[in-house]
Image (tube, rainbow, N blue to C red):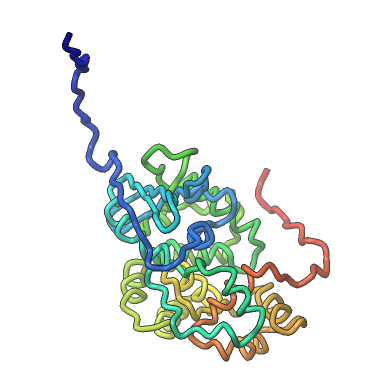
Length: 323
């Protein structure tokens, strides 16, 4: 008797091409801690543009080619699988190696200058400095975090993206949203910023830089080094050295960016390297031997688990929004 397999009707996928996933496999040439490298881009545990579900990292982005959802996981040691949906899916997959730190060059880094850094470097060989390539999104999120607690900034980011961003395509594990377009940031109403809990100095700065957003992005991407990026960004009203450094870290994977003016950073660096709390000037002096890799040292300090003991109760953020 001859067995004939039952036939099933052939159905044609009529969805637009961008609604179907593109997939790729990335094999980094270096050890890669995928979660530690990628989650630097997440703005709080409830960021609507980035989440973790099981072993998969999901990211919704506003790429130069349109919105995209990227799903990334490590299937085997040294093998990263990714799928992307949306009009910007090809761009998102093309950016994946840089997002995973493929362009991060640590060949001139001398970890042996300090025992804590040497040990952290030895224990975290997969720590890479990744670049999102998305300058304006990084700039906007950094402005959100100016002079307020991270809790307040992350909550405002979540609300604005959910209310005024764009729903991410693909089978996301929960509803996800990409940031608004550069024009969209300008159209957020004043009451929307207030309801989201963002203070007027920050909201006005986002709108102001959005008016020149395209030219700012072009100038940053054309800049030759971190100092040139700083000149572009700090020339904008409301943008200082801290905001510029945070933008460089997330968008460009800058290994030397230092967020001078951060409320906690100098204290953490000083305690890790000397056992004492220091201020910004002394932090820069302590980091000077690693010029070119100062952000790498900072990331290794955080990865080491060494933290300055808390000296006071956590600040309880005030909420001035209308009820």
